[in-house]
Length: 306
Image 1 (tube, rainbow, N blue to C red):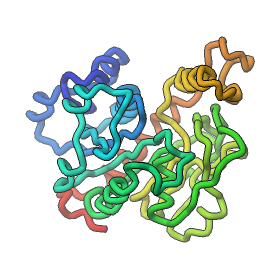
Image 2 (image 1 turned 180 degrees about the vertical axis):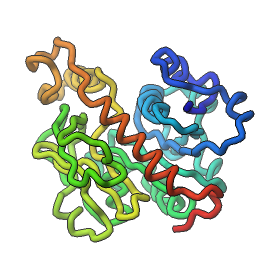
Image 3 (image 1 turned 120 degrees about the vertical axis):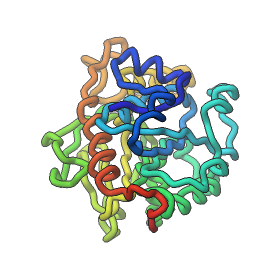
Image 4 (image 1 turned 120 degrees about the horizontal axis):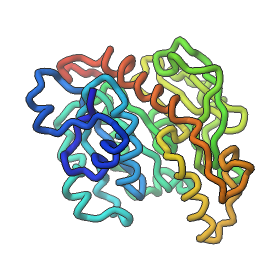
C-alpha cells in the first residue's frame, strides 16, 4: 500500500525511482479508507534528505499513510530553502486542533547544548504535552529520544568521551514485543551522536522497557509499557552514505573525527560502505505502523486519551 504525500514534494521523485509506492493526493482522496495520519517534526538541518529517508521507511508498509511535515517557528532553518518550507511544512498552530495516529520527532545537531538552551525547547515541550492527548504513539529519534526521555521522565543525557559514530551490532531483549517482532538475534544500526542516556536511568523507570541494546552503543530501542512512546537512540533511517558525508563534513571543519566504526570496508574512508541495516530498519518501522499504531489507535482519532 502507498504513502500519501504532496504531489510535488522532492522526495516523491526519489521514492518512485526506488519503486516505493507513492500515491498522489487526488487518487488517495477517492479511496474509501482512512489512512494513518503521521506528523513528522523534522529538526534536522537538511530537511529534504531527512524527509526522503523517513518517508522511504514509512512507505514500505501495507498501510496507506498520510504525512504532515512540521517545523518549529522559533528556529530559522539555514540549510533548507524558505520556498520548500512554505510549500510543504506546517507550524504547530496549524495542526494543534488535529489528531494523529503517530508522531515522529527527529534528531537534531544540538545535543551538546543543555536542553533548556535550545532555542525551540519551549516549543518542543508544548508539542510533547499536546501529543499525550492528540497522538496515539510517538517515535523519538536520537536527540529527539534524549529530549523525550528528559521531558517525560526526567532522564538526563550523558556526554560521551568522543563522538559515537558508526554502524553497531545490537541484540533485541524481547523478540515478542510488537516493535521487535521478527528481529534476528543481532541487527545493525547507525549511530551518530556526542551524548547518550544511562542504562541504569532507563531501568530505574518502571514505565519504560529496554527492547534492544549494544555492548558498544548502549541502549538503542526503548518504549513505554503501553508503547505510546518509542525512543530510538540510533539512526535506522540513514542512507548508505550519510555517515560518510558527516565524516567528511567534520574533517572539513577541522574536528579530526574518528573514522566511523564498522562502516567502511577495511576501515578505508575511500572504500564504499556496505548497507547492513536496511532490512531491520524497514521491519522496525513496519512493526511500529502496524502493531503499535494501526492495530491499537482508535478509528476516531478524537477518542485518543492521555
